[in-house]
Image 1 (spheres, rainbow, N blue to C red):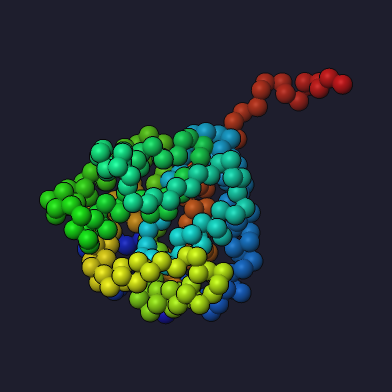
Image 2 (cartoon, rainbow, N blue to C red; image 1 turned 45 degrees about the vertical axis):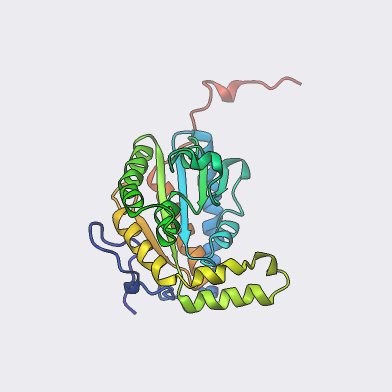
Length: 269
């Protein structure tokens, strides 16, 4: 099987049909990555501790995907071992009246992680070029100019010490159907079943087109998109964890220097 790139070429139109949502990197099943993932989660915990202590960078993880793509599950599995004091998770819902009275990035900027923190966006500012486009909530002239606003916003973040990691969780339409049916039939998951998701499924093609434009227009050197094959949940978790680790390791993080003469200090009885 040919290797599928995680980061598409920058400057070219992205076609989601070119990316197999069932791709698993040559692994046969989750047993082949279980030990590696266990070690990776430990490594992520170590790196997050140094990030928090150093207070030099913030890390913003942006998760986008169709309904049932696995944003909640990914957060639960990837960040389960890190210090909760150093992670802030924001799930963006429909804007409130107060948020609608301001520019579309106002509510987003308030949730950007501080230095030393990891911020996770479960959906994000990209909803303002996705759902508003598909459902025609604003004119085309409005959502179309937002691509440039988003690029400038993300560029500003990266120039001021926030690392932006963007993941599109790519699932197939058949996989979404199976996951919706699983929610419907499992008493422990029925609370997550939203009849509105069935209506949204009718807009599958429109969302695919909107995503392709968002991925293409907002795919930059400083804040590139990662197209994560997400039909197999274990591979989704594996590849996102590994990518976050590699990103933090490139920063060459270090603990702050201790006070001078610390080893000679005596702790009083």
